[in-house]
Image (cartoon, rainbow, N blue to C red; front, side, top):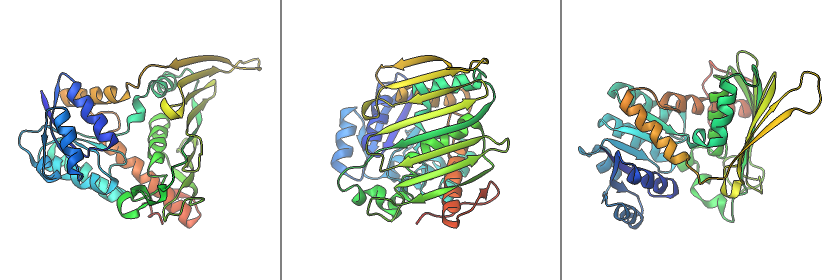
Length: 342
């Protein structure tokens, strides 16, 4: 039985706590939130203890796993402290405000011989898992390109929330929803070699970007075109992968993003409309449970989980290379470190 401490009792922290409490191999033992009432309520809901500080959770001798689910400014510091105290850590994306912060946690995990997993939950959505299997099995031939779009329209006052604060967030929409798209593109295509693009503020009164457009290229010449937006007034998620023999599309995430669906198209050699198979996933979102199972499986076997700490760091490094490319209006290669937004 693994004993779990959750730091951060917001929306994501509550999801993590519910999964940990329900799993037969884990017990929710401790919770901390800067809003003490919220932390106490979540701990009480699942029979855990409400801690007085995040450091108390990170250092607790009776915990095996710490979940870091705070605003971006706390993620790397919490993860690093917990790893140094001998805990395994599931750290929500993007694992820090910048690569320098995330690298501290990755190196702490490697020194301590503990598992660090990035909370890239989208890898576990069934439509995305479907297209990943299609690509990995070569069903659409060698991959040529990927196109991803992800966004929402915010809400009144969005530019006064923590995601618009450089000190708390580190970056804007590219670091927020964009981290998921960059992670998925790396997962499907492999590592990139160079990137160019644009990041800017089109609508919201904030010092961070509300839109970002990235063109990433692998050493083999495959292109990933990604657009993330806080001016996508109707919520949207779409991920399309194109191979020499067809394509695979995942769209929707459930809820306000619409029904989750995968489409696999196979090109006809004689031309004409492709043959398509459509896979609908109307079931309740199981991605949080699947992600937790993968994390626990990694702990039991000693393997790396999906979206390991190193993979999460690579995602952050490419995000910051895009920031640099946008700021300097040029192509940035893998050998260069990224710049800072703003």
